[in-house]
Amino acid sequence: GKIGGGGPCRVITPNTAKKPAIVVLDPIELSENGTVETTIHIPEHLGAMRLMAVCSATKGVGSADTSFIVRDAISIMPSGPRAVAPGDEFLYTFTLFNHDLPTGDCSFTVSLPPELKTDADTTFTQSIDTNSSKTVTLLVKAQDVFKDCVVKSTLKMGDFTKRNELPLTIRSGNPGMA
Image (cartoon, rainbow, N blue to C red; front, side, top):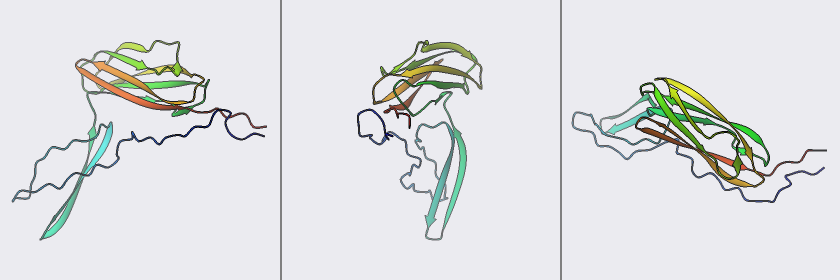
């Protein structure tokens, strides 16, 4: 039988948009009493992070760490495939979180690239309770093209806006094996 896809060959470029898993800060000088107060900028993240500090002086060394939760007042957690073949139908699921705002209406929009089609509405308005979530699903079909694309989504609630991007590769389909 034939092995491989039936489509044209193309070079897949590595995803360079990934955020770093470790952020190393410049050294910080301590005061005479051994304390410091500073502001750090952390990458956008939803979930737990660990802050670790290492100290050194002529009299000794030390270290400490602590974990903390990072989140905005609202957030989007998208779920969907990372690669599909032309003609594939699949679901995108978006979980919309209201972590801290009062119960109220939100607007949610999904922007599909031209390589993806849906018959469903891509704009939603609904109420989300404080410390609660809602789930939105969208049935999508990949068109007959080989391409890397991005599904963008935007959640607005009160004065807060949260955006998300989910990469997708439409790859060559694999023929059945005989």
